Image (cartoon, rainbow, N blue to C red; front, side, top):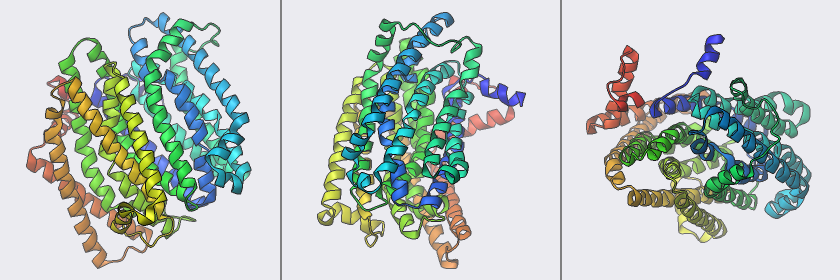
Length: 553
């Protein structure tokens, strides 16, 4: 037990080492998230109750982004890093006091005006189950307060290189929701599920506090707030907060549009989005989070060449993983959804719709992962206005496409083509696919814009990643074709009518696709594949790295 505790508190150096720790944590957290969603779908199906649950998050999540992101790790790390320990303690007292005062005040106001907000956003849901939606929303207003404090502790944890400790937080968050489903739901109904979310948010925060208290943080309630320091932090993070707010507002309106469609559309959209978020968190978020402290430090030292090299290296590895993953997600979409969500009240119609939405969102994976990295690269270089401008344009594009296609679906050639391609034209509620299509269009446009802007500010970036991009596309083609062929062969031998058969067919086809991608990368002489093989062999043998790049791997 002591050894495990020491492992969590151990410092980790190197961008790729930290990325692999975060990726491992993301895998565990994602598996728990899939278990969470499976329990939700088993209990409620893609229907009204689950629609209410997902809709209830929208106002609390918006508050979190508007306020808590002002004091996120990406704003605090550059300000905390150069400070001495005592100065850090005073600064954190100011940030905690200011952040908590804002979150408590805004959440209290939201508690009382929630009936009006929900009536504006979700009139159909309010007409059907307004009291339940209001109750869930008010319970979930505790979440942004708790996660706001977790934002602050995360900055201190990352500065000290305690990525193991930082990585445990999202795992505990999902465990809290699962406990709510298993133990609180039978007692309190759907309100128990919401209280499980609050429990998870509390665990997300508290796991990081003991280690920081031993260093002198959080030992007293902050009574003095340095307004100049507070304003400096808000001023620095305001463009990023606006950027995140645009994304959250876009999500809010997409859910509002889904609420006007067939019952269950919110659930289908949210479940597909959660599934697509698994590889995004494992690959894109892990690299972007791990890279940020290094990028901020390198750029602050004036090492522009090293800064671009680090961003390009991370991008190449992101493309290496995400492009073949996209092909496998599209081919195995029904198998993934059936295995992860298909039980209880979640029927075959729910499966087909969710799988189709998942496949459409899969085409956004590589773009979203690269976008996460480039946005943090711009923040590290102090160019925070560029992500803001791109995100505003992307948000407008997503909402315009979503509203147009859901309103005019019957006359839309795009909508009919997507439905026919995914073989769901005969399924009720298929309009929800247009929301996924809008997100994919917006992601591709915004990422292309970020790549162009980064190239303009830091020449040589596109040249550094172009080969990896084309190799990744070719590997994706090999993976997709191989997986589809094996799936067809297995389907001719035995039918996938049971959960075991679905898992077997999907698993064997997925392995075949992965092996095909590895063979393709080997055939093309992929640098990323060789770097991974060399780094893994050295670590297995216990040999020290021979270069800085190998040390990062």
